[in-house]
Length: 264
Image (cartoon, rainbow, N blue to C red; front, side):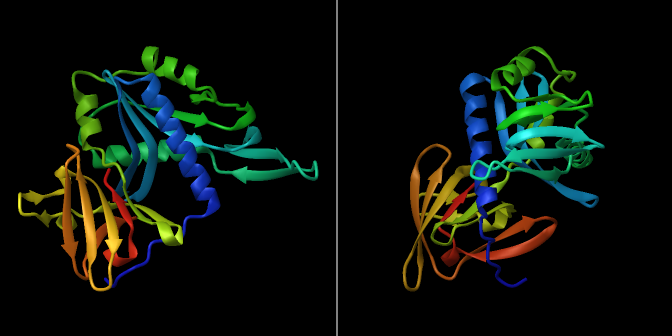
């Protein structure tokens, strides 16, 4: 396991991530009493997947896939055809997309395999930018945030007892690695042993940490660690790294190549 370099973030990936952040903000502002996790990482022997957003509202769970496909969307033969007009030439371009309904269904299937709690999960696809949508199935989807909020509040299948909350608590939200100067980022799960820092006051572990900002010097790195309680600690590291799980594999990333780490 040598040291790796996190991948460049493409413009399409940045656009999609920005859409997810916008969606999360809209949900939190309209449903302040819900619990929410972003980018649920799923790694099983049968495959890997990611869920954009998992919402716990009362005793109901909602797994949501967010798509920022513009133009006219038509579901056909289990997939989607996107018709998008070029604003400069007026030409209409087509693109075939795999079904987001199948995508979220597979992710939920894998999530159930790694979670022992028997809880019902409601699946939703949210189309954020489309002008027109035509589907030939009875899958649940929305293109209006207020209609989605109404569905979460008033519809959807509930789970018995506290199984939904137990299921939600077991789900793992992605950690983020950022390299601002090179425009790189990565969703992954940082291993707990990489998140142990000794300060004069106390030892910090994963459960204590919210984020880590890194300032680089010639022979060492300054880490500013913000805790979940809001307190800030400063730690110096020399030639240190973090070890992560990514798509079922283990990788090591040097702190000198990172600028920011966000947990969960």
